[in-house]
Amino acid sequence: MATQTIPSKPFEGQKPGTSGLRKKTRDFMVPGYLENFVQSVLNAIDGATDKTFVLGGDGRYFNAEAIQTILKMAAANGAKHVIVGQNGLLSTPAASHVIRKYKADGGFILSASHNPGGIDADFGLKFNGENGGPAPEALTTKMLAQSEAISEYLISDGADIDLSALGSHTLDGMSVEIIDPVSDYAELMGTLFDFNAIKSLFATGFRMRFDAMHAVTGPYAKSILEDTLGAPEGTVINGVPSVDFGKGHPDPNPVWAKELMAEMMGDNAPDFGAASDGDGDRNMIVGAGLYVTPSDSLAVLAANAHLAPGYKGGIAGVARSMPTSAASDRVAEKLGVASFETPTGWKFFGNLLDAGKVTICGEESAGTGSDHVREKDGLWAVLLWLNILAVRKQSVGDMMADHWQTYGRDYYSRHDYEALPTDVANAVMEDLKSDLDGLAGRKVGAITVSKADNFSYDDPVDGSTSPNQGIRIFFESGARAVFRLSGTGTEGATLRVYLQHYVDGEGALFEEPQAALAPIIAAAHQIAGLSRLDRDGPDVRT
Ligand code: VG1
Ligand code: CO
Image (cartoon, rainbow, N blue to C red; front, side, top):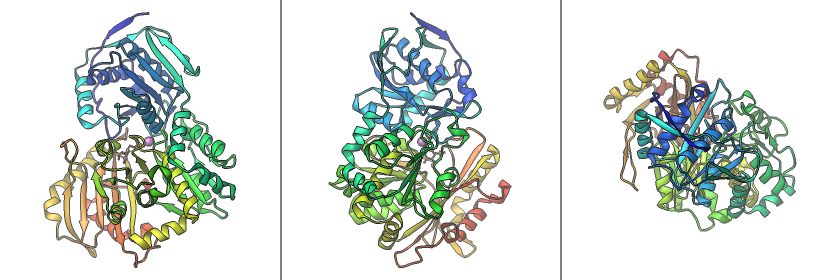
C-alpha cells in the first residue's frame, strides 16, 4: 500500500454555496472532481496530518463510493483516524454531534439535503469544523481558492473498507472506526427530553405520523419514536433510506410531502405529523388539519422550550435567518432575551451558538436547532414538539391558537420559482437593486413601501461582514417581501420570494395564509416585475 500523487487541473465552479458544494451527481463522478474538492478542503484546513475526521452521508447514489475515495485521501494525507457511520450513513445533525462528542478535527458530510438523489440528480459534500458546524465563509473562501490553484491530489491505493462491518479497520496506517449511526444521537436526545412524558403521551393513544421520505432519518426515527418511546409500528413511514429517495424530492414541505399532508388534512387525521429531509436536518410540523409554518414552529419552540429538561433553565437568545418571519423576535422580546437576524444558511449561527449568545436558531426553510449540536436538527425539533405537547396536553391547533392570541400572527409563505434561466433571475435581482433608493414611499395597489434595502450582516462575534444577502421590502402595514436567489440549486437559478404580514392578537388570526397575503403577493410581483418569468405561478408554496 502506498500513497499516490495524482496530477490534476482545476475544475471550474467548486465554490461552496449556502451549504457545501452541490452539483449534479454526474459532475461529481467525473474522475478527479470529488478528489480535487476533498484535497482543496484538506489544503484549506492546513492539511490532515494526525487529524481525526468524521465521515458519513445521507445515503444517496454515489454516497458509498465517495466515502471510499475520501477515506483513501484522508489516509494519504496523513490523517490519524476516521469515524464512519455504518453503511456510510450519518444524518447531518448526528455527524455534528459525533464530531463534538469524539473531539474530532472536523467532518465530511455527503449530502445534497433536500435535492433529489440518483445518477441524474444531485450530490453534495460539505466540511464541518471541530465545533461540529458548517465551515464559515472565511474557510469556504479558502477552499475555493485552493480548488482554483490545485495541481495534484494524494490518494492511497489501499483496499476498500467494508462499510457494513462495525468496529476497527486499518487503511494504509490510518485507523477507521465504523460506528452505529444512531446510538450516540439517540443517547443525546434522551438527555434533552423527558422520554417518560412522551412515552405516556403515546400510551394514551396519541397518534403520530413521521414521514422519513425514504431518506436518512428513517433508522433514527424508528429507533427513537417506535422502539424507545413506544409509538406504534407504522408511525414512521417511508423509513428505509434508498439511494434515490423513492424517486421523490426529500424536501419536507406541503408540496413534496404529499402523502403526509393528505393524511393530516383528511378525515380521522393523526394528532401530529412531521417529516424530515434527505440528510435529516429539516423538519415539517403538521397538526390535524393544520400546517405549521416553520417560522411559527421556531417561535413556539422558543416560547415553550423550558418545558423540556434540556432547556429548563430558559434560553439565552433566539436567532433566525433574515427571510424567516419575525414571530420568534416577538417571543424573544417577551422572554427578555436577545434575538438575532442572520443571512440564510446554518453557517451563520455557529458563532452565536459558540459564544453562548443564543440557544435556539431557525430558518423559514424548515430548519430548527439548538446549541446541542451545530446544525439544524429535524428529529430534535419533532421531539421538542412532542415533549411540549406531552406537558401542555393540548392539540397542535389549540397550541397555535393560544400562541397567536398571545403574540399575534405573522402570516407567512415562501414562493419558489425553480430552474429559471440564470439571466432572467439575475435581471430580477439587478433591477430590484438599482430601484432600491426609489422604492420608499411608492404606492403599489393599496399598500405603500416604507423602506427597502439589500441585507448585509455584521457578525457580532468575529466582526466579519456578509453583504448582499437578499432584498428586503418593508410596507407601511408592517408587511415585508424578501427576494433572493437560492445557493443550493444545481440547475439554472431558483428565485425565492418570501412574504410576511403581521396581525395582532385581536385581529383576524385564522385566515388562509395565501388569502391573507394576497395584497403583499400582488405588490411583490409588481415591484419585481415577475410577469417576465413567464410562469403560471410558483413551483413551491410553503
Ligand atoms: C436553502 C434554504 C436555507 C438552508 C439551505 C440548506 O438555501 O433556503 O434556509 O439553510 O437550503 O438547507 P438556499 O440558498 O437554496 O435558499 V439543507 O437542509 O439543503 O442543508
Ligand atoms: Co438538509
